[in-house]
Image 1 (cartoon, helix red, strand yellow):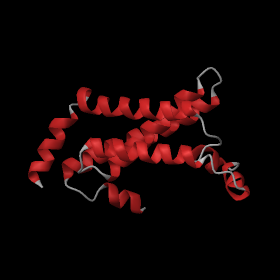
Image 2 (spheres, one colour):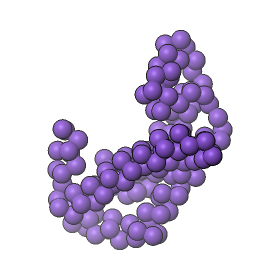
Image 3 (cartoon, rainbow, N blue to C red):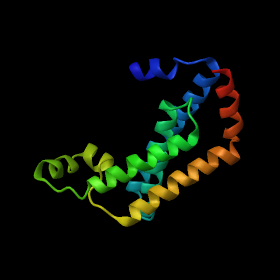
Length: 145
C-alpha cells in the first residue's frame, strides 16, 4: 500500500511519469520471468532485462534527479549483487536456492553478467535520453523546483 502512496505523492506531471515507470517496471519483470522459462532465449537476455529493471526502479525513486545518477546507481547495484555471488557461505547458498534468492541474488558470478548489466543499463539510458527526449523533461522539472 505504501508504494502506491509513494507513486502518487508528487506533482501531477511527475506522478504521470512515475506511473509510466512503474508500469514499465512490471512489464520488465514479466518479460524477465518469461525469458527464463523459454529455452531458446539466451540467459544473458534475462540479465540484460534485470539491469533494465533495476534502472527503471531507480528512476521511480529518483525521478527528480538526472538520469545519469540513476544509471550509476543501477550499475553499482547490479555489480554489487554480481560480486556478492562470490561469497559462498552455507546460509547465503540456502537463500540463493529459494525462488526469491534465485531471481534477486543469482547463483554464481559470471563476467558475462557484468557485460549484460552494462549493456542493459546503457541501452535503457540511451533510449530514455534520445528516443523519449528525456533531457528536455528533466530540464523542465528542474527549473520549477
